[in-house]
Image (tube, rainbow, N blue to C red; front, side, top):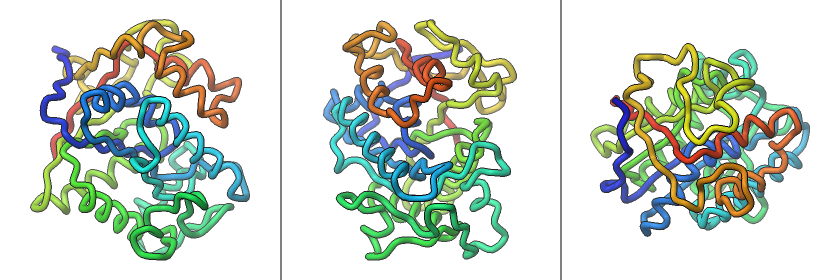
Amino acid sequence: MARELKLENMEHLLVIVPHQDDEILLGGGLIYELLKQNKRVTVTVVTNGDCDCADYTKGRKRLRETLAGLLALGLPAENVVFLGYADTGMAREESFLTALYNAGDGDKVFPSPVSSVTYGLEEKKDFHYQCFGQHGIYSRNTLMEDLRELFRRLRPDTVVTTHHSDLHGDHEALFYFVRDVLKELKEEMSPRLFVGMVHSSEGDDTWPLRGTPVYTCPKGLDQGELDWDKRQILPLREELRGGLREGNLKYEALKKYETALEPEAIDYLMSFVKDEEIFWEIFI
C-alpha cells in the first residue's frame, strides 16, 4: 500500500529535470520541505526549453523564470544548475534527448535551430562552461560527461527525476541517462533514486485530475516500477495547500513560469497544485 515519503536520510537532494517548471510540478513541495529543514537542495535543468525558437530569447527567458520560481520557494540561484541543452519537441521522434540517447555515434552533434553547443545566461553560464571553460557540443558523450561531473561534484544522497514511462520523449530519455550514469558510478556513490510523473499515459487533458487535493491513478499507468500502491506520498506544508489561492507557495512559484503558462496549458500545469506530491523509488 502507499506510504508516506520518509525524509530522515535526505541530507542533499538533487532534482534533475528536462525542462523549466518540471522541478516545481514534480517536487516543489519536497524542495520547500527540505529547505525548511535546513537540508541541501540542488536543482538541475537539462534543456533550455527553447523549442520553436530560432535564437536565445526564449531559452534565456525560461532560465530566468526558473530562477524566479525556485526563489519563490526559497532556493537561491547558486543552487540551480543549467546544463544548457536543446529542446526540440515532445514526441519521441522530435525529442532532442531521445535523439542523443539513441545516437549510434556518441560524438555525433545534433544542432538545434538555436545552437549546437550548450548555453546558459550571461550572468549564469551553463555547467559545461563552468567546469571546462568552453561550451559543450550537443552530443550524447558530452551530456554523459556533464552528468558524471555533476554527480561527482555534488554527491547527492537522494535524486529525483522523471520516469521512462512519461509520454514526453525528453522525460523518458533523461531517466535512461540518469540511470546509466548512476550505474557507471555505483562504486563511487549510491544515492536513492526517486521518480515522478508529469505526462501520464492518460494524457495531459485529463491527468492530473483538475480541482482535487490529491492525485488519482492515471489510466494505463505502468504497474511495474510505478505500481500505484507503491507510491510514496509527501503531504505538503500548510503554505503549499489549499489549491489555487493567493499565498499558496507552489501556486505562486508556478506563476513565475510565464512562458509556459499559455492558455491551453494553464489548467494542466496548475492541476499539479495539490496537497501532496507522489514519488516512486527505483532500484538500479
